[in-house]
Length: 472
Image (cartoon, rainbow, N blue to C red; front, top):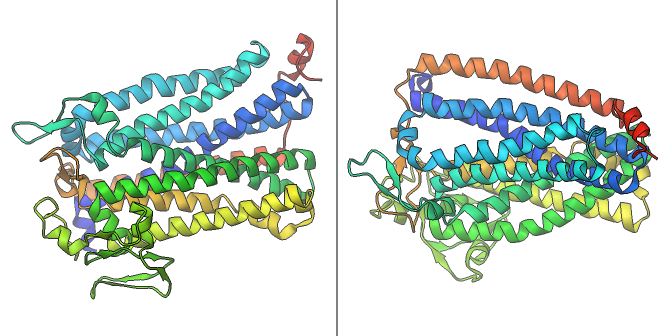
């Protein structure tokens, strides 16, 4: 029970819990933002009651998820000051602008036009309403950009220098800091994964109705939309993931080595799965592609990359200790992410075959319907595993000394926490667990009720009819 007396570890546990809970909501809301916009566009073009009811269902689910995402996100920003005061002081000059921009530009854009969607269907033109739906989704993507800018700077600092007293990073070039070496690759990788999440939520809801033999027309429309969005975003992920891997190999060599458990410098193999023997410093794996990871990072099967032991002996990465680094966590989370991608791709191929090629054969395939009902678990596991890889792979630094980063601009996690005691952190962890579990149960029950009710017309449908509307 020694960990209960370690304030830094407890602060990290609390942050992991709050971030993971928040990032249950964000992928669903951003992913469903696109699904909602597509359905609103269908209704705008068709004007049918069926398409209106479909859009109304997704609006209710999206709004519920958005609200919980906001609630769970606020606590994280507070924890920067309460739990990570030295970190906040170090990065404050950098983080102030993107976090403020996220609130002023992105969040207000998203919430303002969400208000139009909730209260303005009978009060604005159909064209303005459908544009508002797309702006809500654009606002959520813009919000993600500012957050990724802040997080990416921690991974690959740029556009700043160390203050004379060494206490903080001072921004010198905002554009260079914002668009640091990993911002765009990590942004495209992240947002694409969230859109994949939205596609699978659409597929899951549709599969539920097929299983229950209810709302079949709505279900098949959503199967088609989910399949098309899913296959496009999954194919794009190959490009985005490759770009991210190249960036990690070039900028964060210790993370890259941990991802494949490479203690010695070598041509990096690509393991399907395995176990890191941290005592003997080797990977136990039955299947590997020789040079596979080297090829992914450099397009050359013979590229040699430095191992953890060599990096730890260097001046730049001297604080890195292979014996205490979370190698097993990074290795397993990275390979779980890749494995889940394979599962997603296989499921989408099956859905495409049995929806388009086999002429809606999916209607009678209960085994595939059951798999699709639980399928959002797979992209969520991939997303969470990807974040674990990114954040644990950065250790022992909270601001990583990247290869191209300015000299001295780095911060060890052990030096970033506030001067809180173990009991104080334990109390807050317990409170967060209780409150977050209550919120999650409430969210699940509300969304389940909406799904059980199925696609229904909004309360102002009569007003739309009276307008000459748009229900035909």
